[in-house]
Amino acid sequence: MTRLREQGLSELPADVERPAYDRGQVRTGVVHLGVGAFHRAHQAVVFDNALRAGDLRWGVLGASLRSPAVAEQLNPQDGLYTLVIRDGAEERLRVIGAGRGVLIAPEDPAALVAAMADAEVHIVTLTVTEKGYCLDPASGALRLDDPDIAADLADLARPRTAPGFIVAALAARRAAGLAPFTVISCDNLPHNGSRIRQAVLAMAGRRDPDLAAWIEAHGAFPQTMVDRIVPATTAQDIARLSDRLGVEDRGMVKAEPFTQWVIEDRFAGQRPDFAALGVQLTAAVAPWEDAKLRLLNGAHSAIAYLGALSGYEHVHEALAVPGFAAFVEALWDEAQTTLKPPPGLDLAAYRRDLMARFRNPALMHRTRQIAMDGSQKLPQRLLAAAAERLARGEGVAALALGVAAWMRWQSGRTEAGEAVVVDDPLAGRTAALLASAGSDEARVAALLTLDAVFPPGLAADPRFVAAVTEAYLALGRHGAVETARRLAETAR
Ligand code: CS2
Image (cartoon, rainbow, N blue to C red; front, side):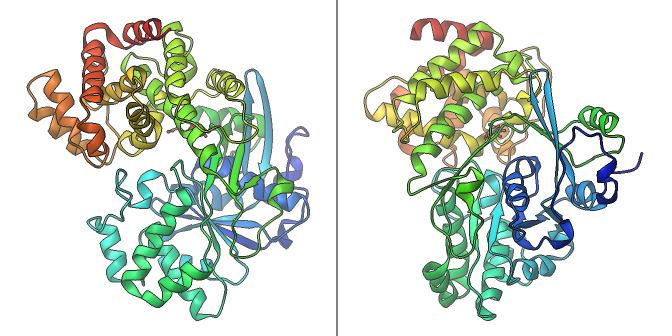
């Protein structure tokens, strides 16, 4: 089957939305690092909306920092792909035209640096996942022991990491007398802008203190909150869409209707009229981040481990189990007391909407996908709220069950005994720690020594240790469904 291409756009079925602007006139104003499904269903749509509104500065050149897979999906399609919005039985198709192709960074790192240093580029967005920041998750310091960071510190002619590319490109812009671009982190990390700024300044400072001072004075790294549920595309999704379109689209992404982007109003130079495009600009992103990370992502991670352990493949299936749904409410009751709701956010309505979003049966969001990289996710999703509640003398039973479920998942087995791959940068360490322990209590204690995940004060708090140990034992005795049900019943 032929691939989706610019020249075939007019032959697509009439109900498929497509770019009406002249793609030949679009310029590249944005470089995006890490062109995964989330970027394609979130930021790229906003830039596509800018193009539709007639501001042709905002085409997006993508870059993959690792694999050539995305370039192979998008480059033979002139950068085009379909956004499939699924809501229950309803489906809406829209071809996104903002993409200007994808560079594979490891194949030609200098080409990516040069592209980022182009005078027309004003924004660098990134979705490189939590681990892509090369920061210690608990302390937030740049991981100098990371081999790629060490390589970038030694030589920036061929950068490997996101901070490395940004530093190299900013150095080139400074040398050319250009202003810095605005760096917009779109990963689910608290204070994501400060984190990438910290990584960039740490690296720049070690190489050239004048460059670091220039970045500090003129650069901008706004904080952001990003939200849209975008499950990984499956071969079946592609086959189904190809049938609909009459051409094959290997770059498609599927997503829920909901989308939200909150950006701190701090830019180094030109940007689209974000406010007109539905993006919320604010001085204070933190309350939005905390609400989203602790309610949406916290529940997502907890239900991912509980669901995956007990054999539920998808989020909506797990949440059809009354005990799991009740547990999520109990988890939210705990997390909610740590939040300062942002102006205009009604937490009760937010929770209701979240539950409905999780239950969207058309998304087929796999629990195992969300279970990935738990060591990088736990601190902001569950542990921060637990620490704050304990500091105020409040209980943490539900948060602790989420943590204990993560611990059980590290064993690499489901409750039915099926072997599973623990996809996590710390999987080797957690496996070794579990193997070194002779009892369930000792296994919990061993995992709590991971100071990249558990802040020492929390790991040493007897109330936290007791709650996690109790939940871990209960999971072994009763299984995830029954443990969650009992917890929710006691919490009520
Ligand atoms: C999910 C997120 O995979 C995960 O860890 O929790 O990708 C989640 O779907 C998004 O943050 C929703 O905005």
